[in-house]
Image 1 (cartoon, rainbow, N blue to C red):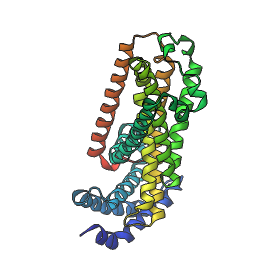
Image 2: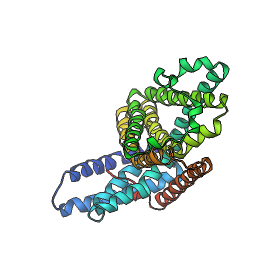
Image 3: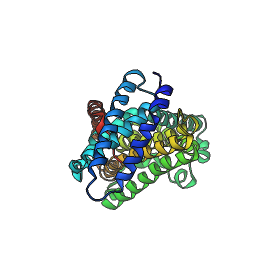
Length: 325
């Protein structure tokens, strides 16, 4: 039975389960026994359908829909055991890295867009240094001084600067996500433009013979910061993709489902941006040697990769637990 046949045959059951979950979400007191019985029956049926779909069509949109539906039903049945800190652990320990794994092609596309912008910015300034004033905003182009990287930046070492950086990072991630409402076109522009700025700056510092110093100031916080922005940007691209490629369901339904999942991805980036802000406020401007700063960048990359890998493995072993509502 292919996905279209399965949808036609079981759509009424899935719709009933979705309506029942919506009604139970509004219940603040005890759930009626008959509702629990019906929920249990529909949950078991949908779980069996999900298992079959995962075996034969793991990448189909129906599989993704059933995964969310079964996860919602699971949480309604067992939510009394999943409150407070346990739900936070569930989200960051399983759901968030699992979502990254499932939407990794879009995260990768976001990174590729940033890289293309970066290459373009670097090439433009490398070909003609005066292009720096065309590529970079005036308030940046007018204050760039590669020689100043030789001086300690202890005056920037403060909680205030760390907070300001964190707020700016949140703003960029939010814009990358919200731009998905423009069917992904705003996200395309934002990612490419920010890459353009970094590429232009990299060319300026390379022409001054300061590339090693430049990247030592960028990478310690940049690894986590860019990862978070790529995740947020990927979520925006996914919303746009689902609008143009809705699959077996209506365009509105797929877009709203993609938006819900993308919000979860955006929420997951907040701790990453907090860490990036702390590093940029304290480690980047410190008097640590450049080698130590590169070591910090390498450590953040390894830890981030391990977190995503471990969380996605846990998500695969317990798929019905990998969503919240």
